[in-house]
Length: 399
Image (cartoon, rainbow, N blue to C red; front, side, top):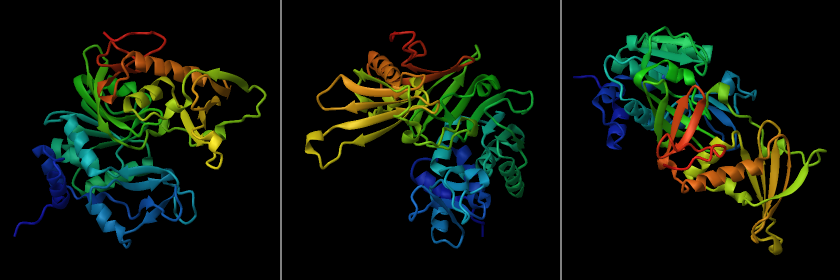
């Protein structure tokens, strides 16, 4: 009797949902046992303590269902040192990604035999194993910032019969990964605000980069870039892709109100014409634009007390950035001008107003019209074509 391939169940699930369509990756999923790349403890939300991740072991009734299903599995919290003595943690810091999302990314990579691949974020090694099976271990270089995770991944991969090059380094910089260029770059962690230019610089002409990307308050989107002869890369977004962020780009954990000091001596009163509630407008194109043009912005909205009918519809909107700049806007249904208070080196309501004006100037584009260019000068957001850069300072109009 022929033995059942270790990844048969997962392959069947992904094929049934239409996620797994490429024979190259179908064979890789079939041949790879995902459970073999799990640590003895994974983590899940603690129902009794919202905001905490509690340890889950194989004796937990959730284990088998989560491991066999199309779920992301948190494999490390708090950079490997859970802040609670009972093993619970606050911040997920490594995981085995959701299989359906992994396959979307691998298929978007369009990698084939002979391509050299640089993987950003080895994690437990499962994704690396899929790459090794499909392309050969000599074609795969993987970079992991956490030395402990890198060591464990090497052991997991060896037990699965794979021996790729695994480097313990910060992939947002310039890790020592040899002199050769890479035909494909795949990141399993999100670039926040800026796609590291070294990923472009180490890519071959016409290479492809696939990475999760996030700015501001967006949950993360999948970005596919093509590298050009001039050493730049351009591309579009391909749907939602919530991922952990590169550790060197990890945002501050402070809550908005923790950044606000209304009693500070430099607080300034004023007015703004922009509706303070605009920061929460849930158009994906706007949220990407806002996050890109007003970096590191956070917001919190406090609705007027329900027991005061005369305040119906009113709200106080706080915005803040980790550098100490903050502002509040008092929304009233009567409209502008809206009263404001602010402090810090940045005029946040002016920045928000400029971002809104720029976005509406281009016709209030949705996410499907937005794209990204990465060059030595940074990461640039544009509408429809690279010439239509969203930048209030340049006042460029769509072509």
